[in-house]
Image (tube, rainbow, N blue to C red; front, side, top):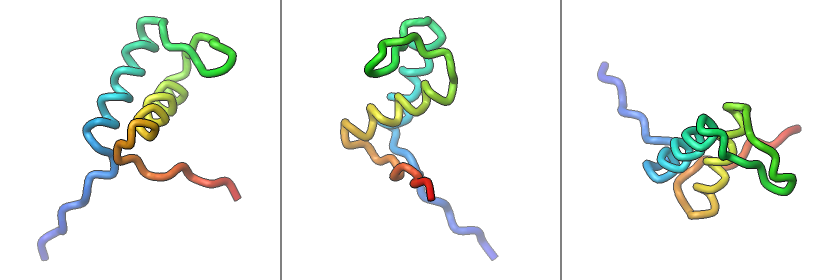
Length: 67
């Protein structure tokens, strides 16, 4: 049996936003929202990139809800 190709979960635009956020984090210029603190966490940089992509209307899965 041949395996069915999986769909892309994130659009190219979303990937670009995340890549840009990661570069900014490495350069030390990525800042978080309200407080304006410098972002050092890799996970937080990814979250910021995805959030920006969502605002631009890129294809990004919905946020997971806590139960």
